[in-house]
Image 1 (cartoon, rainbow, N blue to C red):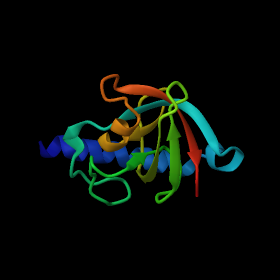
Image 2 (cartoon, rainbow, N blue to C red):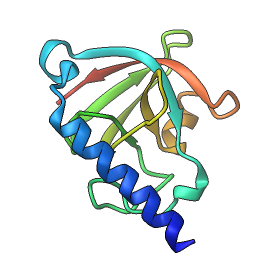
Image 3 (tube, rainbow, N blue to C red):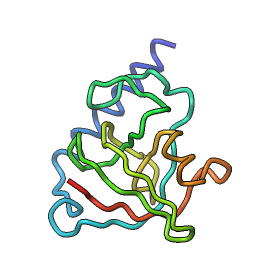
Image 4 (cartoon, rainbow, N blue to C red):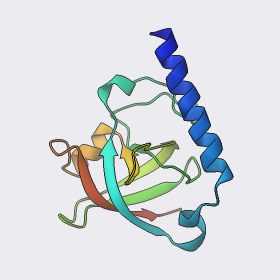
Length: 126
């Protein structure tokens, strides 16, 4: 179990370095991004996020590849009109085509628990 945690932390650290080095088109060119959202597995409850905070499935938080920690974004499902405001406190998702990873509470507010993923628009609020 210890080796698995070290591997996950190493992967997360590498992703943070890569994302930090990349020029963020999201932050510099546009305030809205469209793509697919997913949500965290329960196995991450209590794990340390890239920002150093413990992950909480009941908080309205999310992971984004490049937005600064502490950024607030509005996540909207264009197919249903459901929306939720979340705070960025982690890096991810690390799956091609996905633009944001949400806490379970945020996923519930978007009505995406059964599907697992949903099309979304992410709008930077501050």
